Image (cartoon, rainbow, N blue to C red):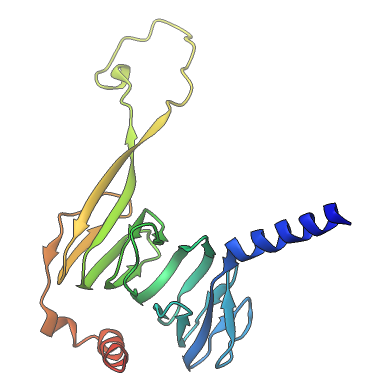
Length: 230
């Protein structure tokens, strides 16, 4: 009996230390899906859920106060939404489309990462948007705070034998494909700056953008208006 009690207490302690964060759908316009079913207002969103918006857009509020908005024709996967011993871990994958987030101020050990096709954006407390295009290129705009963007781009080894013509003396063994390594890069994007990442994974240097011109985009204007309600 005593062993059973100890076992039950240990299971309870583990369940308390590892808790799932959740989100709730707070706005829907047009048609959007959660796990291939029509999204509903006040619907719970949790780890492992897949969001697809088609021609609609959707807002999701996490239970720590962080806001996530997904624009039309977008695909987003909530890979991780956990809290263990007071440490929050949020990992979201944007595979296509328009993504906006207003992240609540995090403590040092919390993690909030948004992954796109060629990189990852990590933050502590900020407002930014990510546009992921079909050709694998992407752009990230920071509206408040700062974002650390990490990525990888392929580095192809050159075969010296291909650099100049050579006489062919007969049948020769053909060397197999050379290994392609990945070159990592890190950029810090400050408030009112933008970074672009090419389809090959090469980043530009962060540069200022025109905030007034940016507001002419209906998607940007809508998000700024929603942020102002908070």
